[in-house]
Length: 92
Length: 418
Image 1 (spheres, rainbow over the protein chains, first blue to last red):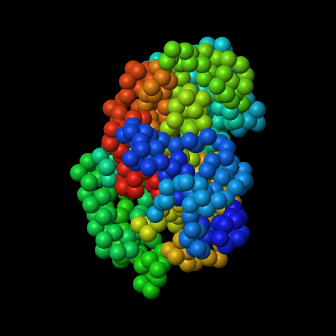
Image 2 (spheres, rainbow over the protein chains, first blue to last red):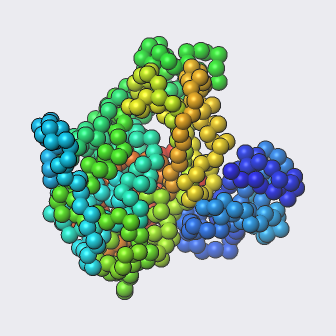
């Protein structure tokens, strides 16, 4: 169970949020990468045990997109920032 | 190997059950093996057994960081079926189902394989059409399948909700009669005992911490009990596929998620088949102990915690009660979760890797239990001949980049949705 501190709405229960994907999937623009890089980005994942940056959406709240730094074993959340401030490509 | 039989039961009963031999040895690891299998779950032990039995390769060690069968083999819902639409999956999963049917005799160990059938409920005409297409595809390949009307399925499963005034009214169903369930521990113990009898060393509490790779070729592994060299190394550690492959410098099309299941308190027999639904990826059955077993979808975020969340428990129970309102009077007794190495197309990764002598068998998403015998069989053949067995040839590591994904649900590279 996570409590997620939405930058706009404050701390809310995890059920209000949807995990979308690992940040690496959306952090580049297609035009800037080779075909090989694009395929790697879409299909391969950094999946080590530890902290990862992930894209979440507050679907049952403000519907804002969040960048969440979260540990995938302890579920500790280290940092949450709005996607627009991180340079992440907007996902929809 | 001490053969189990009615006679051996009787003999040992007379002598107070004091003379049973251990089912397998507990050897110290040697410094070199021909083949090392990382992971003592169903797949790893089945691979070791078929390597020894079918190919005469007995200089084999199975390493497990905990105890055998303590990972995903003991954290699932024990369903065995082969109702797949895609040709590759159909062929492979049905080959596996065929092996399950003879496994108790093969291993001289009662794996309690119960062919109670699996039923998938349809809630709309569209879903029934899909199930008809699935059944026809299966029948064309010689696999058993049948469609049932609403009346037939309600007569078969009296405890099923027959109301039309519900969120998902039952309009018909699909059934695979040969499908069923098995006793998960027995599968592990049966394969372990049979592999050990053929000379395989099963080494528990031996964690692999690194791989020795030299000039693109595997030379062995570093473990918590020292270095072991080998000609071949097979990674068969479902759930930890990504971290293990990372030790060899491989980045995989895998994202690791949690899947939960739970049982109620035991009750008298009331449900004699496995019930699934087109409305969600859920399944309800009754265990041999009488518990009502329920499971459904992933927790939907990456996790290695082996600890599920409560909202999902609530949701699974809600699904189950939609079909079986009378189960609402039961109390939940136990829940567990397994680590699912979800791939980008929902199909496994099994075969060769870019590193010579290093093989992979993982990415089973949540379909691993049912394929234990088939995977072990085909993977052992792959190791012995150093090329993919035809049954598993489609499940290569590089199929994604070439556009040859095997995507049963058509969800694309969104691993949590397969």
